[in-house]
Length: 487
Image (cartoon, rainbow, N blue to C red):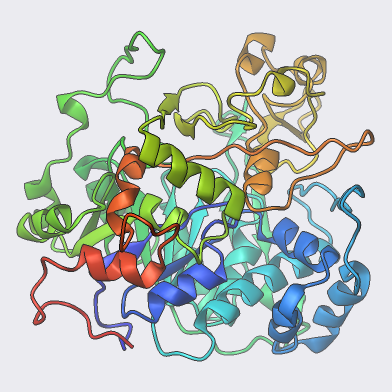
């Protein structure tokens, strides 16, 4: 068991969408380490799980514990299908979020984050965190509130510079209104666009007491960590220091970007994190990116880190939200030595390099994806832009090219962009179905460590491994005195 004052050695990476679901975070937390749920797109994940009939009744059980039951009842009544939708029927879509969300949209976001954290924390005393992307700004404020209502212990945030988040967390603890400045293309210093959330208005004055979670920004350099410590709006409690071999979004190389023969951005000495500078900040930090081995865990501790963050090893374990079909294909490819991970500089509409794993029948490999009709029906990675009349608009480089151009975007910015939102939903068995009955294809992201997954199998005949086995193996070089005591 661990209290919030104790520090984990292993942070399980918060892998979205829904790969780090509550089942995985709970399994890791029960080992005495930090389990982390992915906070991206949880409202859509909740809606689709309910439309599949909520197997096991877990979501309805969690929503039944929400402190404002009438809100939970509205969501269940609207989306829950007792028999589940048919395989060829599309999922019902939620309306795209804007800077002025409706009460119904806010309720869905708050409830989804509450339910995911509640289920991850249920029936044990371990620590649970939630991971957000700074790039996904519109749902950030109600998402934080929902996670904090469920008692989340840590908030982690990457893919940006989240200087405003610590102060927002502080104000939410006090039940005060919060706002987040939105990044909008085409603005000047005089312009100001904000997302706002008022806990008192949302709950009609029934704001409960909230405990402050610890805040860990995910950074790629000691320079950024130093700036966040000095200039953040509230207390920063440590850092996750992520290298370019980690899965998901990577920070771009420092300086002018050069590319390999495969079109991947090249990282050099300037991208190596100064660990002495990290130690000088006198805050705990965890190293991420190819630290999924006992030797690397021991090396991180010897380097002054509090531990490591590991994602890829957990992404393909039994408790992962990744579909069983994908997990089996990855392990089989690992045995055959045919895995190929590429850092794609264009795939993500967010503009960050994005790690993509090539698989059969995947978005990255299939010719069928080239024939896919472009659309933006989830919109989590849309970017704000200032219209001619001064109002705020939204566009995504993965949407139809003509629509993007009509919104003032440059058509060349759409080249190579992929619908990350729908691809990641497909990874976890929540693929949308089009009018012809075709399902969206998966887009699997992972770190370079994926080639080492076989080390977690107990025997050559084993076909899977558990989150507990990952933790046990990673800590096998760490003395019993420094290991956290499993719950």
